Length: 235
Ligand SMILES: *Cc1c(COP(=O)(O)O)cnc(C)c1O
Image 1 (tube, rainbow, N blue to C red):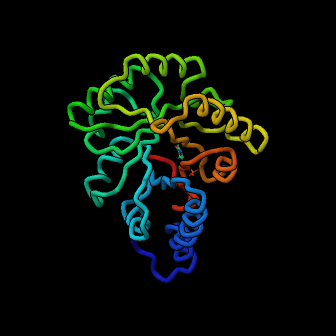
Image 2: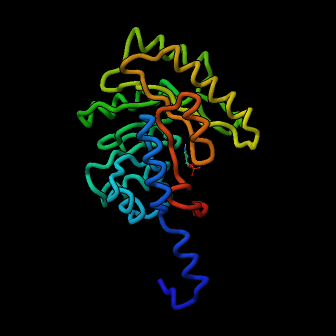
């Protein structure tokens, strides 16, 4: 990289770097509340992940299978990799050997494939069921009825080597805090219907809304841009 002595370029370089100060603040804030921090590192280079790893961060979230696989090879083995993107059944096999938690599971078909690949990899894979809570139709997830069907089926006949550990959701892209709050409250109410010792994780909240998510019962937040800076568009 050629930065030269151009102050504007230098400023750009430093503002794009990992924000370790914000990281320490958020870590402290979440520790006090017992909330898990998933540092969302999608599209960010391995060096950025290492910068937080060296400060004690172990949970990192990725959205793209190939990118997560490439980073897993390069980076320390005690990192806990969270897959938070939309996972296609035919790609489960690539992450099954190492993934720690899959946040976005939204069909029985996908659960079945995860079970199959977990058996092959001789391990148990933890998953969260994704619920569609936003107004945008583009977002993925189950509705209340589909959740009920999966949970009923699961209680009768769980698939081997998969643990359903809770729920995940993404609120609408909106400036209207009341809308976002309503969506979080709705997700929390669904979560409470099934909550027990093993169904105990509620993954909701991102950079823009994580504080409100925690106020509404989240115990796992997925934070990217606040920690790593704004993202360039993927390719
Ligand atoms: C990218 C992403 C995040 C992080 O978003 P930020 O706004 O950068 O914090 C969280 N959750 C999911 C599912 C994502 O895709």
